[in-house]
Image (cartoon, rainbow, N blue to C red; front, side):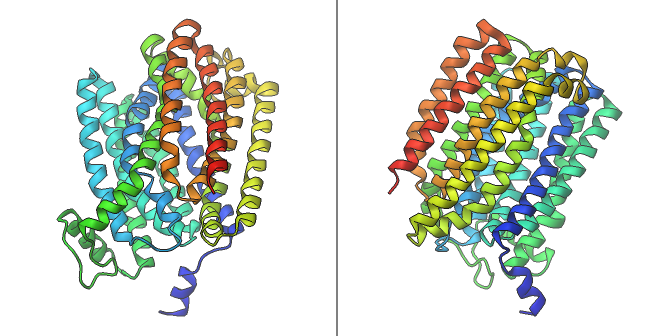
Amino acid sequence: MTLKSLQNSQPLSLRRNFYWTFAGNMIYASCQWGMLVVLAKLGTPEMVGRFTLGLAVTAPIILFSNLNLRAVQATDAKQQYRFGDYLLLRLITIVLAVVVIIGLTFVGGYRGETALVILVIGLAKGIESISDVFYGLLQQRERMDRIAKSMIFKGLLSLIALGGGVFLTKSVAWGAVGLAFVWLLILIVYDIPISIRLIGVNNLRTCFTLVREFFKVQSFERSPLQKFDTKTLKELLWLTLPLGFVMMLISLQTNIPRYFIERYLGERELGIFAAIAYLQVVGITVVLALGQSATPRLAKYYASGDRSLFKTLLLKLIGVGVILGAVGVLLAWVTGREILTILYKPEYARYSNLFIGVMIAAGIGYIGSYLNFGITATRAFERFTIPYLLLTLLTVATSWLLIPNFGLVGAVWTLCIISIAGCLTSTFILIRIR
Protein backbone atom coordinates (compact mmCIF):
# COMPACT_ATOMS: atom_id res chain seq x y z
CA MET A 1 0.00 0.00 0.00
CA THR A 2 1.38 3.41 -0.96
CA LEU A 3 1.77 6.27 1.51
CA LYS A 4 -1.09 8.13 -0.18
CA SER A 5 -3.36 5.09 0.01
CA LEU A 6 -2.45 4.59 3.65
CA GLN A 7 -3.27 8.22 4.44
CA ASN A 8 -6.58 7.98 2.59
CA SER A 9 -7.61 4.95 4.67
CA GLN A 10 -6.71 6.42 8.08
CA PRO A 11 -9.58 7.44 10.40
CA LEU A 12 -10.22 11.15 10.84
CA SER A 13 -10.45 12.85 14.22
CA LEU A 14 -13.86 13.21 15.88
CA ARG A 15 -13.76 16.96 15.24
CA ARG A 16 -12.98 16.60 11.53
CA ASN A 17 -15.60 13.88 11.16
CA PHE A 18 -18.15 16.17 12.78
CA TYR A 19 -17.27 19.09 10.51
CA TRP A 20 -17.54 16.94 7.41
CA THR A 21 -20.73 15.24 8.56
CA PHE A 22 -22.31 18.55 9.52
CA ALA A 23 -21.43 20.07 6.14
CA GLY A 24 -22.68 17.04 4.22
CA ASN A 25 -25.90 16.66 6.20
CA MET A 26 -26.57 20.41 6.19
CA ILE A 27 -26.25 20.74 2.42
CA TYR A 28 -28.16 17.52 1.78
CA ALA A 29 -30.97 18.35 4.20
CA SER A 30 -31.16 21.91 2.86
CA CYS A 31 -31.56 20.51 -0.64
CA GLN A 32 -34.26 18.12 0.59
CA TRP A 33 -36.06 21.06 2.17
CA GLY A 34 -35.43 23.00 -1.03
CA MET A 35 -37.46 20.38 -2.86
CA LEU A 36 -40.50 21.27 -0.74
CA VAL A 37 -39.84 24.96 -1.40
CA VAL A 38 -39.69 24.29 -5.14
CA LEU A 39 -42.95 22.34 -5.01
CA ALA A 40 -44.58 25.09 -2.93
CA LYS A 41 -43.34 27.87 -5.25
CA LEU A 42 -43.91 26.14 -8.60
CA GLY A 43 -46.96 24.14 -7.65
CA THR A 44 -49.64 23.90 -4.99
CA PRO A 45 -49.96 22.58 -1.42
CA GLU A 46 -51.61 19.52 -3.00
CA MET A 47 -48.40 18.77 -4.90
CA VAL A 48 -46.39 19.11 -1.70
CA GLY A 49 -48.87 16.78 -0.02
CA ARG A 50 -48.61 14.21 -2.80
CA PHE A 51 -44.83 14.16 -2.58
CA THR A 52 -44.99 13.95 1.23
CA LEU A 53 -47.47 11.08 1.02
CA GLY A 54 -45.06 9.19 -1.22
CA LEU A 55 -42.34 9.56 1.39
CA ALA A 56 -44.71 8.67 4.23
CA VAL A 57 -45.95 5.46 2.60
CA THR A 58 -42.51 4.17 1.55
CA ALA A 59 -40.41 5.23 4.55
CA PRO A 60 -41.54 2.61 7.13
CA ILE A 61 -41.08 -0.23 4.64
CA ILE A 62 -37.66 0.94 3.49
CA LEU A 63 -36.43 1.56 7.02
CA PHE A 64 -37.56 -1.89 8.17
CA SER A 65 -35.80 -3.52 5.23
CA ASN A 66 -32.65 -1.51 5.97
CA LEU A 67 -32.44 -3.20 9.40
CA ASN A 68 -30.37 -0.16 10.41
CA LEU A 69 -27.35 -2.01 9.09
CA ARG A 70 -25.38 1.21 8.95
CA ALA A 71 -25.58 1.64 12.72
CA VAL A 72 -24.68 -2.02 13.23
CA GLN A 73 -21.68 -1.64 10.92
CA ALA A 74 -20.53 1.55 12.62
CA THR A 75 -20.66 -0.06 16.08
CA ASP A 76 -19.06 -3.35 15.01
CA ALA A 77 -15.89 -2.46 16.88
CA LYS A 78 -14.79 -6.10 17.10
CA GLN A 79 -15.21 -6.72 13.34
CA GLN A 80 -17.69 -9.53 13.96
CA TYR A 81 -19.05 -9.40 10.40
CA ARG A 82 -17.47 -8.65 7.04
CA PHE A 83 -18.65 -5.92 4.70
CA GLY A 84 -19.82 -8.56 2.23
CA ASP A 85 -22.27 -9.93 4.80
CA TYR A 86 -23.83 -6.50 5.27
CA LEU A 87 -24.01 -5.81 1.54
CA LEU A 88 -25.62 -9.12 0.63
CA LEU A 89 -28.26 -8.82 3.34
CA ARG A 90 -29.09 -5.28 2.18
CA LEU A 91 -29.46 -6.38 -1.46
CA ILE A 92 -31.87 -9.15 -0.49
CA THR A 93 -34.04 -7.06 1.83
CA ILE A 94 -34.28 -4.05 -0.44
CA VAL A 95 -35.60 -6.14 -3.33
CA LEU A 96 -38.27 -7.51 -1.01
CA ALA A 97 -39.10 -3.98 0.17
CA VAL A 98 -39.69 -2.69 -3.35
CA VAL A 99 -42.02 -5.62 -4.03
CA VAL A 100 -43.99 -4.82 -0.86
CA ILE A 101 -44.28 -1.15 -1.85
CA ILE A 102 -45.67 -2.12 -5.24
CA GLY A 103 -48.25 -4.39 -3.60
CA LEU A 104 -49.19 -1.83 -0.94
CA THR A 105 -49.72 0.89 -3.55
CA PHE A 106 -52.37 -1.13 -5.34
CA VAL A 107 -53.94 -2.63 -2.22
CA GLY A 108 -54.12 0.84 -0.65
CA GLY A 109 -56.26 2.07 -3.51
CA TYR A 110 -53.89 4.80 -4.67
CA ARG A 111 -54.49 5.85 -8.26
CA GLY A 112 -53.13 8.11 -10.98
CA GLU A 113 -50.22 10.39 -10.24
CA THR A 114 -50.35 9.66 -6.51
CA ALA A 115 -49.72 5.96 -7.15
CA LEU A 116 -46.94 6.74 -9.61
CA VAL A 117 -45.24 9.08 -7.13
CA ILE A 118 -45.31 6.39 -4.42
CA LEU A 119 -43.84 3.76 -6.75
CA VAL A 120 -41.04 5.97 -8.08
CA ILE A 121 -40.10 7.24 -4.61
CA GLY A 122 -40.03 3.63 -3.41
CA LEU A 123 -37.59 2.75 -6.19
CA ALA A 124 -35.46 5.82 -5.45
CA LYS A 125 -35.34 4.97 -1.75
CA GLY A 126 -34.29 1.44 -2.62
CA ILE A 127 -31.34 2.81 -4.57
CA GLU A 128 -30.48 5.13 -1.69
CA SER A 129 -30.51 2.17 0.69
CA ILE A 130 -27.75 0.48 -1.29
CA SER A 131 -25.64 3.62 -0.94
CA ASP A 132 -26.37 3.56 2.79
CA VAL A 133 -24.62 0.22 3.33
CA PHE A 134 -21.49 1.66 1.72
CA TYR A 135 -21.86 4.64 4.05
CA GLY A 136 -21.84 2.16 6.92
CA LEU A 137 -18.42 0.89 5.83
CA LEU A 138 -17.04 4.42 5.65
CA GLN A 139 -18.56 5.36 9.01
CA GLN A 140 -17.03 2.29 10.63
CA ARG A 141 -13.63 3.39 9.32
CA GLU A 142 -14.38 6.92 10.59
CA ARG A 143 -14.15 8.47 7.10
CA MET A 144 -17.19 10.74 7.26
CA ASP A 145 -15.60 13.06 4.72
CA ARG A 146 -16.34 10.62 1.91
CA ILE A 147 -19.93 10.20 3.03
CA ALA A 148 -20.31 13.98 3.18
CA LYS A 149 -19.04 14.44 -0.37
CA SER A 150 -21.50 11.85 -1.64
CA MET A 151 -24.37 13.55 0.16
CA ILE A 152 -23.38 16.97 -1.19
CA PHE A 153 -23.32 15.68 -4.78
CA LYS A 154 -26.58 13.83 -4.26
CA GLY A 155 -28.38 16.76 -2.62
CA LEU A 156 -27.48 19.37 -5.20
CA LEU A 157 -28.20 17.15 -8.19
CA SER A 158 -31.47 15.94 -6.61
CA LEU A 159 -32.73 19.48 -6.17
CA ILE A 160 -31.89 20.32 -9.79
CA ALA A 161 -33.50 17.11 -11.06
CA LEU A 162 -36.73 17.51 -9.08
CA GLY A 163 -37.03 21.23 -9.80
CA GLY A 164 -36.34 20.74 -13.49
CA GLY A 165 -38.80 17.88 -13.77
CA VAL A 166 -41.60 19.79 -12.05
CA PHE A 167 -40.88 23.00 -13.97
CA LEU A 168 -40.91 21.28 -17.37
CA THR A 169 -43.78 18.84 -16.84
CA LYS A 170 -45.81 20.32 -13.94
CA SER A 171 -45.79 16.79 -12.54
CA VAL A 172 -44.41 15.59 -9.19
CA ALA A 173 -44.03 12.09 -10.64
CA TRP A 174 -41.48 13.21 -13.24
CA GLY A 175 -39.62 15.11 -10.56
CA ALA A 176 -39.42 11.87 -8.57
CA VAL A 177 -38.06 10.08 -11.64
CA GLY A 178 -35.26 12.64 -11.68
CA LEU A 179 -34.47 11.80 -8.05
CA ALA A 180 -34.21 8.09 -8.78
CA PHE A 181 -31.87 8.71 -11.72
CA VAL A 182 -29.58 11.00 -9.70
CA TRP A 183 -29.34 8.58 -6.75
CA LEU A 184 -28.50 5.70 -9.09
CA LEU A 185 -25.85 7.83 -10.80
CA ILE A 186 -24.17 8.76 -7.51
CA LEU A 187 -24.21 5.14 -6.36
CA ILE A 188 -22.48 3.93 -9.51
CA VAL A 189 -19.91 6.65 -10.10
CA TYR A 190 -18.98 7.54 -6.52
CA ASP A 191 -20.31 5.45 -3.62
CA ILE A 192 -19.32 2.02 -4.89
CA PRO A 193 -15.82 2.88 -6.18
CA ILE A 194 -14.85 4.98 -3.15
CA SER A 195 -16.14 2.50 -0.59
CA ILE A 196 -14.89 -0.67 -2.20
CA ARG A 197 -11.45 0.88 -2.74
CA LEU A 198 -11.21 1.21 1.01
CA ILE A 199 -11.20 -2.58 1.37
CA GLY A 200 -8.87 -3.30 -1.54
CA VAL A 201 -10.90 -3.43 -4.74
CA ASN A 202 -9.37 -0.91 -7.09
CA ASN A 203 -11.70 -0.53 -10.06
CA LEU A 204 -15.33 -0.06 -10.92
CA ARG A 205 -15.49 -3.19 -13.10
CA THR A 206 -14.70 -5.38 -10.13
CA CYS A 207 -17.32 -3.58 -8.06
CA PHE A 208 -20.04 -4.40 -10.60
CA THR A 209 -18.83 -7.99 -10.73
CA LEU A 210 -19.10 -8.29 -6.97
CA VAL A 211 -22.64 -6.88 -6.91
CA ARG A 212 -23.72 -9.17 -9.76
CA GLU A 213 -22.30 -12.20 -8.03
CA PHE A 214 -23.99 -11.25 -4.79
CA PHE A 215 -27.35 -11.41 -6.54
CA LYS A 216 -26.39 -14.91 -7.69
CA VAL A 217 -25.60 -15.71 -4.05
CA GLN A 218 -22.18 -17.10 -4.94
CA SER A 219 -19.03 -17.00 -2.84
CA PHE A 220 -15.59 -15.59 -3.44
CA GLU A 221 -12.32 -17.31 -2.77
CA ARG A 222 -10.07 -14.45 -3.89
CA SER A 223 -12.28 -11.42 -3.22
CA PRO A 224 -11.37 -9.05 -0.37
CA LEU A 225 -15.00 -9.44 0.68
CA GLN A 226 -14.37 -13.17 1.18
CA LYS A 227 -17.07 -15.77 0.98
CA PHE A 228 -20.17 -15.71 3.12
CA ASP A 229 -22.21 -18.57 4.49
CA THR A 230 -25.89 -18.98 5.24
CA LYS A 231 -25.29 -19.33 8.97
CA THR A 232 -23.51 -15.96 9.15
CA LEU A 233 -26.25 -14.28 7.13
CA LYS A 234 -28.93 -15.67 9.45
CA GLU A 235 -27.00 -14.54 12.52
CA LEU A 236 -26.72 -11.04 11.12
CA LEU A 237 -30.40 -11.01 10.22
CA TRP A 238 -31.47 -12.02 13.72
CA LEU A 239 -29.11 -9.47 15.23
CA THR A 240 -30.47 -6.60 13.13
CA LEU A 241 -34.12 -7.62 12.84
CA PRO A 242 -35.15 -5.98 16.16
CA LEU A 243 -33.42 -2.75 15.16
CA GLY A 244 -35.06 -2.79 11.73
CA PHE A 245 -38.42 -3.32 13.37
CA VAL A 246 -37.74 -0.42 15.73
CA MET A 247 -36.70 1.87 12.86
CA MET A 248 -39.98 1.04 11.15
CA LEU A 249 -41.84 1.90 14.35
CA ILE A 250 -39.97 5.21 14.67
CA SER A 251 -40.85 6.02 11.07
CA LEU A 252 -44.47 5.14 11.72
CA GLN A 253 -44.49 7.47 14.72
CA THR A 254 -43.47 10.27 12.35
CA ASN A 255 -45.79 9.29 9.52
CA ILE A 256 -48.96 8.02 11.23
CA PRO A 257 -50.12 11.62 11.89
CA ARG A 258 -49.57 12.31 8.19
CA TYR A 259 -51.74 9.35 7.22
CA PHE A 260 -54.52 10.75 9.41
CA ILE A 261 -54.06 14.26 8.01
CA GLU A 262 -54.32 12.98 4.43
CA ARG A 263 -57.34 10.85 5.31
CA TYR A 264 -59.35 13.40 7.31
CA LEU A 265 -58.04 16.77 6.11
CA GLY A 266 -56.77 16.13 2.56
CA GLU A 267 -53.55 16.52 0.58
CA ARG A 268 -53.57 20.31 0.86
CA GLU A 269 -53.42 20.32 4.66
CA LEU A 270 -50.83 17.55 4.55
CA GLY A 271 -48.68 19.70 2.26
CA ILE A 272 -48.89 22.68 4.63
CA PHE A 273 -48.09 20.53 7.67
CA ALA A 274 -45.14 18.85 5.94
CA ALA A 275 -43.67 22.15 4.77
CA ILE A 276 -43.78 23.57 8.30
CA ALA A 277 -42.51 20.37 9.94
CA TYR A 278 -39.52 20.23 7.61
CA LEU A 279 -38.18 23.46 9.09
CA GLN A 280 -36.70 21.27 11.84
CA VAL A 281 -34.04 20.47 9.26
CA VAL A 282 -31.25 22.60 10.75
CA GLY A 283 -31.51 21.04 14.19
CA ILE A 284 -31.91 17.52 12.85
CA THR A 285 -28.85 18.03 10.66
CA VAL A 286 -26.69 18.97 13.62
CA VAL A 287 -28.08 16.07 15.66
CA LEU A 288 -27.34 13.53 12.92
CA ALA A 289 -23.92 14.95 12.13
CA LEU A 290 -22.73 14.89 15.71
CA GLY A 291 -24.49 11.64 16.57
CA GLN A 292 -23.16 9.72 13.56
CA SER A 293 -19.67 11.05 14.11
CA ALA A 294 -19.73 10.13 17.81
CA THR A 295 -21.35 6.69 17.50
CA PRO A 296 -18.15 4.75 16.62
CA ARG A 297 -16.35 6.50 19.49
CA LEU A 298 -19.19 5.72 21.92
CA ALA A 299 -19.14 2.08 20.77
CA LYS A 300 -15.41 1.82 21.39
CA TYR A 301 -15.74 3.31 24.87
CA TYR A 302 -18.54 0.90 25.73
CA ALA A 303 -16.83 -2.15 24.21
CA SER A 304 -13.64 -1.40 26.17
CA GLY A 305 -15.59 -1.01 29.40
CA ASP A 306 -14.79 2.69 29.84
CA ARG A 307 -18.22 3.76 31.14
CA SER A 308 -16.95 7.13 32.40
CA LEU A 309 -15.89 8.36 28.96
CA PHE A 310 -19.07 6.89 27.47
CA LYS A 311 -21.30 8.84 29.87
CA THR A 312 -19.29 12.05 29.51
CA LEU A 313 -19.54 12.08 25.73
CA LEU A 314 -23.23 11.17 25.80
CA LEU A 315 -24.02 13.99 28.24
CA LYS A 316 -22.22 16.47 25.99
CA LEU A 317 -24.38 15.32 23.09
CA ILE A 318 -27.55 15.74 25.14
CA GLY A 319 -26.45 19.26 26.07
CA VAL A 320 -26.16 20.12 22.39
CA GLY A 321 -29.70 18.81 21.89
CA VAL A 322 -31.06 21.06 24.64
CA ILE A 323 -29.41 24.15 23.13
CA LEU A 324 -30.64 23.36 19.62
CA GLY A 325 -34.19 22.87 20.85
CA ALA A 326 -34.23 26.16 22.74
CA VAL A 327 -32.89 28.13 19.76
CA GLY A 328 -35.45 26.57 17.41
CA VAL A 329 -38.42 27.42 19.66
CA LEU A 330 -37.16 30.99 20.11
CA LEU A 331 -36.84 31.56 16.37
CA ALA A 332 -40.30 30.13 15.68
CA TRP A 333 -41.84 32.31 18.39
CA VAL A 334 -40.16 35.57 17.37
CA THR A 335 -39.98 35.33 13.56
CA GLY A 336 -42.19 32.36 12.65
CA ARG A 337 -44.66 34.28 10.46
CA GLU A 338 -41.90 36.04 8.53
CA ILE A 339 -39.97 32.81 7.99
CA LEU A 340 -43.01 30.99 6.56
CA THR A 341 -43.90 33.93 4.29
CA ILE A 342 -40.41 34.26 2.83
CA LEU A 343 -39.69 30.57 2.43
CA TYR A 344 -43.06 29.48 1.09
CA LYS A 345 -46.09 31.66 0.39
CA PRO A 346 -48.24 34.05 2.51
CA GLU A 347 -50.91 31.35 2.94
CA TYR A 348 -48.42 29.30 5.01
CA ALA A 349 -47.86 32.21 7.44
CA ARG A 350 -51.37 31.75 8.82
CA TYR A 351 -50.07 28.62 10.53
CA SER A 352 -47.19 30.23 12.46
CA ASN A 353 -48.56 28.96 15.79
CA LEU A 354 -48.18 25.42 14.49
CA PHE A 355 -44.55 26.21 13.73
CA ILE A 356 -43.89 26.94 17.43
CA GLY A 357 -45.48 23.64 18.47
CA VAL A 358 -43.50 21.70 15.89
CA MET A 359 -40.23 23.18 17.16
CA ILE A 360 -41.12 22.30 20.77
CA ALA A 361 -41.66 18.69 19.72
CA ALA A 362 -38.43 18.80 17.70
CA GLY A 363 -36.37 20.08 20.63
CA ILE A 364 -37.52 17.24 22.84
CA GLY A 365 -36.88 14.84 19.96
CA TYR A 366 -33.27 16.01 19.61
CA ILE A 367 -32.56 14.86 23.17
CA GLY A 368 -34.25 11.53 22.49
CA SER A 369 -32.18 11.05 19.34
CA TYR A 370 -28.91 11.43 21.23
CA LEU A 371 -30.13 8.95 23.84
CA ASN A 372 -30.87 6.53 21.00
CA PHE A 373 -27.37 6.98 19.60
CA GLY A 374 -26.09 5.99 23.03
CA ILE A 375 -28.27 2.87 23.15
CA THR A 376 -27.22 1.90 19.63
CA ALA A 377 -23.54 2.20 20.60
CA THR A 378 -24.10 -0.47 23.27
CA ARG A 379 -25.55 -2.80 20.60
CA ALA A 380 -28.46 -3.62 22.92
CA PHE A 381 -30.79 -3.53 19.94
CA GLU A 382 -33.40 -5.85 21.44
CA ARG A 383 -34.13 -3.29 24.19
CA PHE A 384 -35.92 -1.04 21.69
CA THR A 385 -38.61 -3.42 20.48
CA ILE A 386 -41.39 -3.50 23.09
CA PRO A 387 -41.11 0.16 24.22
CA TYR A 388 -41.23 1.45 20.64
CA LEU A 389 -44.14 -0.81 19.78
CA LEU A 390 -46.04 0.79 22.65
CA LEU A 391 -45.01 4.27 21.43
CA THR A 392 -46.37 3.47 17.97
CA LEU A 393 -49.69 2.35 19.45
CA LEU A 394 -49.76 5.60 21.44
CA THR A 395 -49.19 7.53 18.19
CA VAL A 396 -52.17 5.79 16.57
CA ALA A 397 -54.36 6.50 19.58
CA THR A 398 -53.45 10.19 19.89
CA SER A 399 -53.71 10.76 16.12
CA TRP A 400 -57.13 9.11 16.05
CA LEU A 401 -58.34 11.18 18.99
CA LEU A 402 -56.81 14.55 18.17
CA ILE A 403 -56.45 15.02 14.40
CA PRO A 404 -60.06 14.44 13.29
CA ASN A 405 -61.31 16.70 16.11
CA PHE A 406 -58.67 19.46 16.19
CA GLY A 407 -57.11 19.37 12.71
CA LEU A 408 -53.49 20.41 12.33
CA VAL A 409 -53.40 21.65 15.91
CA GLY A 410 -54.20 18.11 16.98
CA ALA A 411 -51.38 16.84 14.78
CA VAL A 412 -48.90 19.14 16.56
CA TRP A 413 -50.18 18.02 19.97
CA THR A 414 -49.60 14.45 18.83
CA LEU A 415 -45.99 15.25 17.89
CA CYS A 416 -45.34 16.79 21.32
CA ILE A 417 -46.86 13.86 23.21
CA ILE A 418 -44.86 11.30 21.24
CA SER A 419 -41.61 13.26 21.58
CA ILE A 420 -41.97 13.41 25.36
CA ALA A 421 -42.90 9.73 25.61
CA GLY A 422 -40.02 8.75 23.32
CA CYS A 423 -37.48 10.73 25.32
CA LEU A 424 -38.64 9.17 28.58
CA THR A 425 -38.58 5.70 27.01
CA SER A 426 -35.02 6.08 25.73
CA THR A 427 -33.87 7.36 29.12
CA PHE A 428 -35.39 4.32 30.82
CA ILE A 429 -33.74 1.91 28.35
CA LEU A 430 -30.32 3.52 28.74
CA ILE A 431 -30.52 3.42 32.53
CA ARG A 432 -31.35 -0.28 32.41
CA ILE A 433 -28.34 -1.13 30.27
CA ARG A 434 -25.39 -2.22 32.42
